[in-house]
Amino acid sequence: MRIPVSCDSCSNEFSVSENFAGRRIKCPVCDEGVRVPKSADVISELPRRTSGNKKKSKRSTGNSGGLSPLLVGLVAGGGVALLGLLLMMNRTGTYSLPAPPVRTVQTPIHPVVTIPNAQLKTAEAGQSFGQNLGGGPVPPPIAAPDPVVVAKVPLAPELLPAMTMPDLIAKVEKSTARIIVRSLQGASVGSGFVIDSDGSIMTNYHVIEGASSAVVEFDTGEKADVIGFTKVDKVRDLAIIKIPQDPKRLQQLPVAAALPEKGEKVAAFGAPRGLPFTASDGIISAIRQSPEFNLRKEGTYLQTTTPISPGNSGGPLVNLRGEVIGINSFKVDGENLNFAASATDIRAVLAEPETALTPLSPAALERVFTRKNPFLRAENIARTQRGDMLLGKISEAGIMILPFAFDPTGKIISFVDREISKNLIKKARWTEVDPRYQVKKSTAFVVVLIYFTDDPKKNPYALELMCSVQIVARDVDKDGFDYTAIVYDEHKSLGKIHINSLEIGNIPNGMKKEIPEFFGNIVKELRKAQRANESQNETM
Image (cartoon, rainbow, N blue to C red; front, side, top):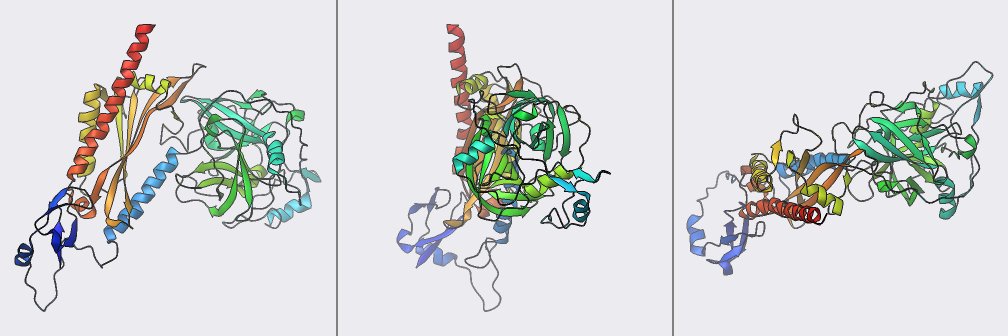
């Protein structure tokens, strides 16, 4: 015989052997103590049953062995929201480090393809330049009145031999560039590659959006100021910028004429975390049309296992023949979820007529991908000497809670909000400001992300509350430019809660203890940083 037990703390219902009758045991969800009723008490409390239809308990979770519709909605809806936020927090594009070593590898310049007018007419009918996987021909180059048109679409020649990885790296790195961007938000780093011998560099639009100036750096150590842009495609997140470089020094990369096959080996190049001229390899995992979980609504994207990081944006993704098959664009938090704009979209942009050379400016390069999150370009310097120094100097802060957790009653989010105010803001002696109206350079931001995870194998009705806190401040780099810095970064479980407790807003005692301790530990780190600053000032 088994005895039914209900936890008063988290509302979890379970059963135990009659050997535990009258004893106290731990709830398997919240670890709180629960008294098991005596067998006689259970029998006396059993309701009378009739032969008619049975009434379901208010805590019924549906068919045995299956998840409730509420839990299914929680996992589906909450997961998508969290994935969208993590995508935004991990967009590639920001970081700057010292100059690269000098390289001396020489590779030939791939010639520009010459296309007769007759072929251009065929292309207009959708028979020459290939098809977008979403349907419709890729736009061809615009025919000029001359009998022969030079199309600036460096299509790769057929049957290029495969190279070893060292040879591939030597060839591609010569054509890869690190792009240092300056904007009103400070400095950031992205990548790009040479697309022709006229000084054109292709990159992601989000690398240069909002830019007031930029510098391109090659593996030889040579640098060139960006004089403007000639093409931007905000839908496909692609752009072409221009530098006044000697054509003899530019080694352009050919663009593949067709999409790669699933499973094909590829390599990514760029400046991850600002580290220049880095190569990584992997395979093509899938070819997708307009991933649903990011801001891009059109285009063909290559999903790869090739590792990329912030700073890789705009760098080339190539096959073993050295052909550009994509542009590293973004990643999603998880294993091997890296994405590149495909050669299909690259060719479509290259085939469009160039616009007049336009100087870089925030007005000309409006923010599309980063305007909703001011911290996308933030550099994480948490738990470094510089980060601790900035943490110890914070005197005012704005709180930004991103409650992507399913919380029907709102009681959990409200409880977390109160604990932030009581155990962080007040104990840290910060002045709280409204992030919407009182933002200035000396203001720090405390960004709090709340969400749930579950483990259906262990207990499909127990959810774990996760909390991620980042404290963001502003700093000045060695060149005197402002940039955004993450000076505190912590991710922790705040306890478990049963789905029934979540429905009625009953917060377990264990969670009530974990949450204030979590924010109290932030204050301890703050005090430690403040003491370090005071000691340093005394020795100066």
